[in-house]
Length: 217
Image (cartoon, rainbow, N blue to C red; front, side, top):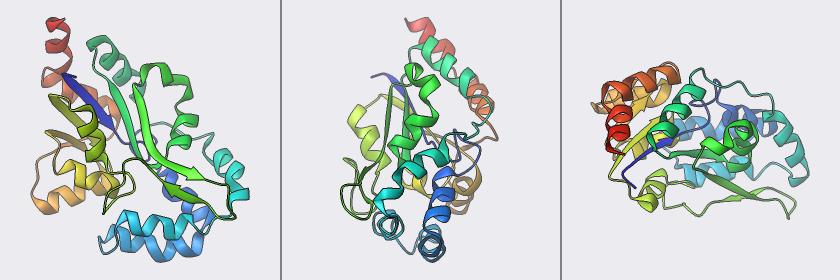
């Protein structure tokens, strides 16, 4: 794979942090206790998220799916997908939230998306149990492991929050907004800021991603 785009879902493709909103709605006490510890990097995502999600009864899963169905998308997604498709660059969604939720919201665009990776859920017990094929000692969805799986020659990572921080430290090119941008500024790391996905398309165009790849075909 020559080039690939790895894009976060919650708060990046979506206008709001749907996964966070979901946790605060269905597990308010655990979310209020655990999420600030995760954001402050005192608690890992691998240790923290199960403490929240594991308090949600499995019988509520259909309600969780309904919760995301009318999620608003950040402007520019259609154009970004079109550019990537024309240039032959795989667009891969890597979410720190539920794979299923991303699949529901992105169903109209699924043919333009190469793959969706995220949290899986086991609802066979009384309480939700979450896992993923990509977990490591720090994250349930280690996004750097997803990139390593595809081993592209060049990659751009697009994200907005704590679930994108570790991969942003390793990715050759990073587009960041909101909390992720704050983390990277504090660490003195270079990134491309964006408000919506039209900014990402324009930034990649300026760096020759669309034109160069098209000409190489």
